[in-house]
Length: 235
Ligand code: F6R
Image (cartoon, rainbow, N blue to C red; front, side):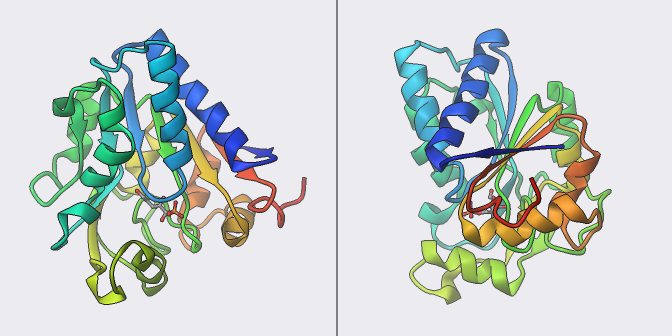
């Protein structure tokens, strides 16, 4: 695991989008693992712009999203809708190649990923409590795709996207920590001072109370932080 500190979230988006664009150019059949949330939005915007400018072909690319809400009455808050809006509708990806975990494939999602060849690059954000995907503190490091109950802090954080906190789903299907660890390359992005504690604890301890700390075991995990997110770690 390597921590890379950049001046701004704009610089991070530029660099991470380059990694993805170059990955697609080198391997048009690349398998990408994708995250939702506020963090990757700038990166996805840059990918769309660069794909247009450089005429990058995404038609053979396959994607697996990290997670999806369960019992979500509002389709416009689904992660499928998020990905369509922030990335897929802006590139020439074949939607048939874009996958999400859900109630019907909980037991087979890891197998689907493995059969497709495995994830080449996994994009991640991080929760204030150190969660990745919806793997909250206490999730075993050997977990596969499973149903997760969201912690109160996560429900509160995610309520900014909903009309009221009561509308936020309390359950989701998420890739497990072991699923994530199997990706060949992992890129975690953390921006803003509210992620500083999580970055500090993932760099210091390696235990299930900080799920992101599993990345210490990964051979090729890049942790991109802006100055604010990195302010509590020793450089
Ligand atoms: C989203 C996901 C979550 C987010 C995390 C940070 O697919 O898996 O783990 O990455 O909650 O969210 P933001 O980026 O909104 O701060």
